[in-house]
Length: 121
Image (cartoon, rainbow, N blue to C red; front, side, top):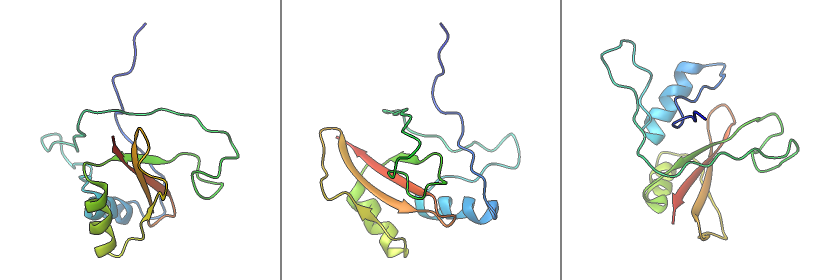
């Protein structure tokens, strides 16, 4: 059986896609989509990736209309949280972290999407 190799892209609807893309660049370092084929796209580091469907009525993702939640691996969650707070982004750290699989925190992007940050153990 052929299997997928990993995520090839993440696509979000937005009333202002240019501003949302710039927010992800400015706060999380995700490069904007290139306007040509010579400029490289954002490269993620190899590491664990979780694929986990949740119940339709989960409260874990934030507002009920959010059908998916991005989870980004980070090297140093405390440093990332400090950087985000310094830029005026509200960060909620999981008070029960760390877990056997790592530590977690959450932010909300300008469109109201809850985003999870994960420092693997």
